[in-house]
Length: 422
Image (cartoon, rainbow, N blue to C red):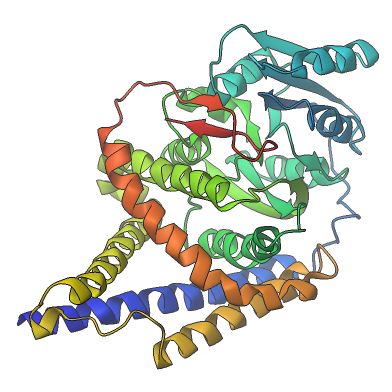
């Protein structure tokens, strides 16, 4: 194959890959909707459970003084007969600890664990799980608000099947005043929601939502709970549960209202952590994917490999485009422009079709989503660039990171979000 043919093949791949994945996600999500969602009850009308086992809510917190009270209060108002709330104060430097202690004094269903040093979210989840009194855990971030009916929607899956090890909920963005906030409303519906639906159809899910997920404690015990040295503990526990042959389900009726980054810097740090976490998990468990018994994880692993390859090729094309203005390149390597032409029109149409399908599906969970449709035209330009750049930066960051190094909480740049730092 000549150099020109290789370049053409690379250009074709960078165009057709996102197109193929978009239609795969759309097809999978539509099938999931008609097969599992269309006739389901609405979120405000949860199913009657044959039994209601106790629930332990586990909430790791680090410098969450602005959100902790509201988050814990949303749990205390759950439409569920028996539960406890375990809040972990991970060495907060603000008055998070005092707020949690005050709530524990007001309601005996609340217990607080204090860490004297910053030990990280994974250790907070571990401690909460080990201190819990019940078999089923619902874990959420310290700035999230859980819908009052979400517990029943999550627990029903554990009752239906003893093979269910975890259930991931449906995060909804609640800060929507900025452009980033508006775009992320559509992203969590059209990208994250569609991906989880499609993955449930063709195999395994890549990850539970770290902000809201339920777990069976027996399953966690089997795999050793959360790893304290992984940047994305939610991706890690998802892979380990599924490699241990536990089922992970998606419950779109389990709504949870979350805060997202409001500035580019915060968004970059979040997406870099997600990308780095995926690479770390793959490198640690890739050998386990080679066995036939784990074949249902092949699609998840392949999707990560191809997605990362796509990001590097996008970076290469962009580099050649810039070099073309600085030095003389062979004609085969000359990139005339990276601005979208007719291919961009096709991708744009596909993207808007994807958003339309996802917003139509998600309208059963939240009204008024159509008003955010216009803002989705910015998604490919902004988020694909950030995704590609984050994937490129994540690979060396993950490979060079020392194994066993604890992932700890750090203060974010936007003041209301917490992230993990390698």
